[in-house]
Length: 411
Image 1: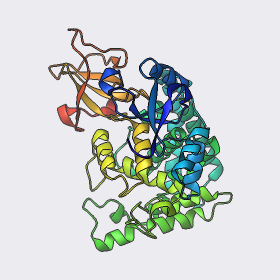
Image 2 (image 1 turned 180 degrees about the horizontal axis):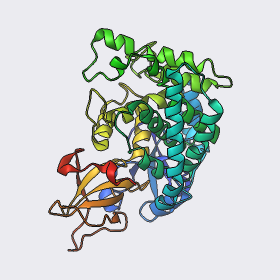
Image 3 (image 1 turned 180 degrees about the vertical axis):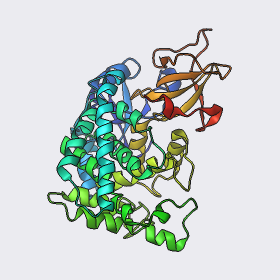
Image 4 (image 1 turned 90 degrees about the vertical axis):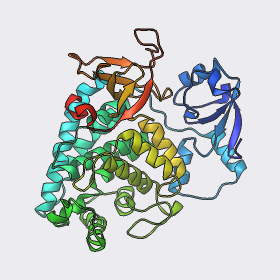
């Protein structure tokens, strides 16, 4: 057991605590992921069926004061960390709607936000000022939707239309940032700042030459030097906006800084990078590598998560990577997977504890032929296939395999 872990009785568990070990082998419980976060008191009640106590990882636990520690970093002793864990009171968000109901509302909000994002990019290209009231008006319904159920907007962000990478990327990053902040227990006003900052941190790219933005090859040293200037361009653009708060400015200025100091423009490292910048860096990188870009093919969300795990305490702070994986899941929304019975589907929603048993829209039968109707199954409740064998995910499928374009199924 690590020194950063403390023994906690089941009755003392609270939402936000990260369970790292049980008082018995994982194989003696239905939990298939070694390590998970307590999201509600229902999770505590479920855990009480199998354990008397667990070991909680202090550093991976999420709480309001954890976020404050990241905003205003200071060294804490082990005793202080334990006391912080015991007294933590994070903002806890319950899922208020199911996926299907929330999609009805989220579609309209997503379209409005996408249109506003596109208009912002056009205005910047034409040297017009940003319409902040219109942006806030479009942001608010998205934030409210993600608070109610983050899966709906996560699902819609996978609809990435070709030739519109920059503003699609901005919208997606805005959604991921809000979902991440929601998971960390940040208050709604901070979620709104995350949404605006993520939507704006790449606006400076509109000041770069089209030839550079649409380059189909890896940048050479000179080209990369020019691309890095987009951070300054973005900062210059938002500096002209009245009522932009400090957190948004920090997001724009630091979204390309990296934990080990290898980022730009200032080579900041560790806790010198503000929490809003750390969140921005993670969501920016994640959405970029799962997207088709002019110079790179999309990586599957599942493989992207494996990459992020390798980058802990190198590019990004390990504790935040652990929490981001909790947000998107081991098999993130949009991942194409093959099941143990040979059928193929796409992940459409997560379970916050049972990460390996998400909801799946079935696309192909065991012969890899398309179904006439795309049914949805929930691996949390459907444990066996029609022959009585255990039904589970066996592997993720690379985008394009079997001719599947998941985006055509998302609506």
